[in-house]
Amino acid sequence: MRPAVAITGISGNLGRVVAKRLHRSERIIGIDSRPFAGRPKDLELHALDLRKKKCEDIFRKEPIKALVHMALTHGPRTTGDQHAKNVLGTTNVLEYCARHGVKKVVVLSSGGVYGPSPDNSNFLTEDAPLMAAARFPEIRDLIEADMFAQSFFYRHPDIETVILRPVQIVGPTIRNAASHYLRLKHPWTLMGFDPVLQLIHAEDVALAIQRVLEPGIRGVYNIVGPGEVPLSQILRELGRSPIPIPHFAARPLLRTLFRYGVIDFPPGDLDFLQYLCAIDGSRAVTDWGFKPKVGLRETIRSVLGE
Image 1 (tube, rainbow, N blue to C red):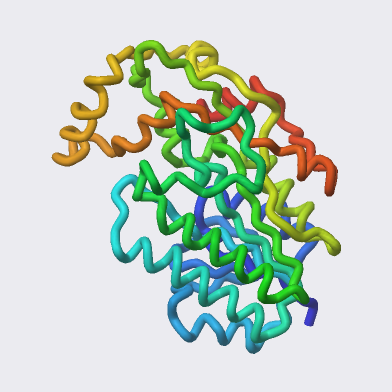
Image 2: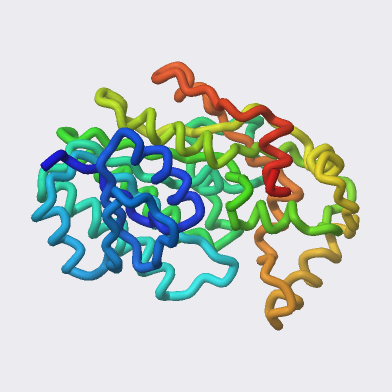
């Protein structure tokens, strides 16, 4: 039987993009507790929770040459179950790889783990501390999972482990905090602030994942899109009419609205509208020649479904 690439979180919107790219050249085994409507006929799907011991049977019985771990979820209202899925799920699946001879592991983290801050330098490298939880505790489980993947990298030097930290991912089918915000007709902005943002198209993230599955690539890599652009320019391109709010009033107002369930925009996310969190993607360019294929204007407009 041909060795397979296992993909966790394959039924998510980004997971589907990745699966449709990889299945053309690889045998794919998907692991996700959610259904995958319209999945390619040659794609094998296991409806399992990564925390369940039955999940290990897949690694025990199937010849798996690589894992793409994309089952790290993040929502505006963090629950204990979400934290357990992210941290325990990551711990379990990486240990399955170590026990059953998987030679390549790719973990999709996020550039958001660095966190926006008034003290950030212009472009953060992969060596910058992961400080997002200091001001935004909802992201602490993603940081824990990222740090466990880093420790796995050093504990298992025989396994080629790659940790990818992409900037904000957008695309016609992507449903995340950045996409929800950019799809608002009248998004909030903070008076006096116009932060530079970085976006990347989902297809370019899938391209990066495909590239690092090749032998010889290991390490931590920031993944950036076709350029940086001020928030105001993005909103103009999308035809939005932003509502400027004084920053001293925005946070208490948003905190109240969020507490009573009026909106699902956590107060911590205001930092992304105020402070810089730009990352440096030059290591991926130097080490394995990554270059996004989708242009800046097309990337921005992809949130409109174009």
